[in-house]
Amino acid sequence: MKYVLVTGGVVSGLGKGVTASSIGVLLKACGLRVTLIKIDPYLNTDAGTMSPFEHGEVFVLDDGGEVDLDLGNYERFVDIILTCDNNITTGKIYQSVIDKERRGDYLGKTVQVVPHITDAIQEWIERVAMVPVDGKEGPADVCVIELGGTIGDIESMPFVEALGQFSYRVGPGNFCLVHVSLVPVLNVVGEQKTKPTQHSVRGLRGLGLTPNILACRSVKPLEGNVKEKLSQFCHVPVSNIVTLHDVSNIWHIPLLLKKQKAHEALIEVLQLKGFAKEPQLDEWTRRANICDTLQDPVRIVMVGKYTGLSDSYLSVLKALLHASVACHKKLIVDWVASTDLEETMEKEEPELHKKAWHLLKAADGILVPGGFGDRGVQGKILAAKYARENKVPYLGLCLGMQIAVIEFARSVLKLPHANSTEFVPDAKTPCIIFMPEGSKTHMGGTMRLGSRRTHFVTTNCKAARLYGNANFIDERHRHRYEVNPDMVPEFEKAGLTFVGKDETGKRMEIIELPDHPYFIGVQFHPEFKSRPGNPSALFLGLIAASCGQLGSLLRTVCSENTTPRCHLTDGPMTPGPYRHGNLKEHSNGLANGNYHADDNGQHE
Image (cartoon, rainbow, N blue to C red; front, side):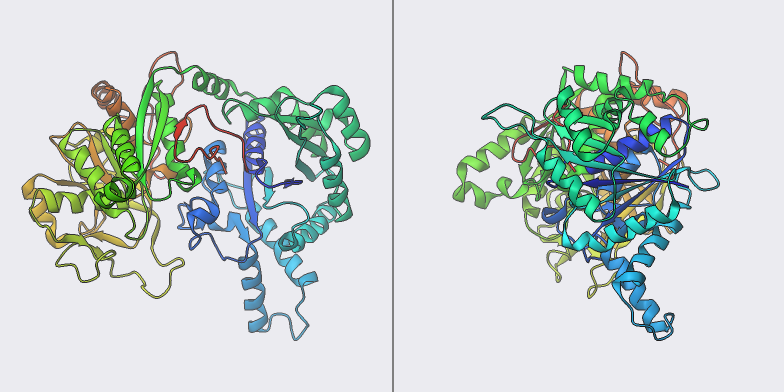
């Protein structure tokens, strides 16, 4: 097993996650099998209980792991299926060591950070690196490890020590350290400054780690004399110093690495000559170039409660981007805080209220993502009502589906007290109820999590047709509440169809309005399995409906009996096979404004 460690210096937010993912893409293009591990030094056991404002979205894996959003980045870029063990946290390591101590595994010894914590970290890495993540048998060839945070952070010290020991143990030729650092330009002098990177590398070496490759973040490509200076003071060959300068979209980063022959440096350090081939990134290149040249816009309004931080909905944004590129449309996302749509805001902040409604009414399509809590719920209900009554394409995810059900109950069934017991525990008309197997006392890991099967009740619906007339699908879930099954007959009698259900037939998974151009709600999160070359079927349906392509898309899909898969050509997407169950790329933080498909800044 070969290991590539990606660390960061100077400041956070440089793009370690994108860099690690891009290295994975490059090595995979060389014919090597790749797995990835993310190390997060925080004490939380996982990301499940963390606020999106604190750490961005919680990414959900097939096995139900609630993990850092960078693992979503890895899955999307490298097209792999990771497990919860691919995300290491301080909490997990300490918990495992303490559990061993309680069992008496240490035979009365004093349990210390060194060697017990550091040994546990190394054992975890070696164990997880051997688990295949690409659907093939046997371990991968290379494991890429991203160490979260910045070198020098006190909370990451045990991991740095463990990785220093690990590099010595696996030996030369099996370990490569890629250090991502900043080369800023001071406006006063306009000169690229190397001193921050010099200090960062000095600190790294002082902690027992020596970089083999420097990945320097900068606004523009590094000048030749700057590379030579870095080489001299950081003891890294000029050929092993690559520039990660600002690009129009992050799909260019693997191409940037290839252009600077980073794969040759990696192969040389890891002694993989004879095993690796010249990287083939033709489709990746076409996709990146197409994204840059799209002109015809499709405008989607995102109605949520975390609109101040776009990373809270990162996977949703990426799924929209994948679908829009497949349809050859330039994605524009307008953020609307759901509270701004509510009547109370009309009195308190009339301008915000007016602007929110203006954006909603100008949308080609409306998306209500998942979420928790009652803040902004009424605004989401109003958005669903507007989409239903005005025949605007609508996609509701998890809570977004539940919102659509509540709105339908109030407006069509004339049940004014219809609500979710999440918001009103003693609701008179509980159309959304708490799941029996859930826990109301423990928050972490107690939801219905991970990949679950949904069976289509009928194939005569848009959702089933988008999935290639499949009888069932496997998608990822993260919820505590569900549609009240006792009310389903009443809903269906009024025209709201439940076209997808779980294995028991009692848990509602997909809703549709047959007489609407595109009104679909799902209890699961299809965004987590969307890929650049294989966009989510339901997101593709939303984009196609929003730009008038849904009819032709469905005809194509049905004639081929396949779900849409992006094959990059000069025209809109063509279909390909759907892979059942096998289906921190960050935005640039454009909150409270427009998100453009080519506005992907490179961040951690």
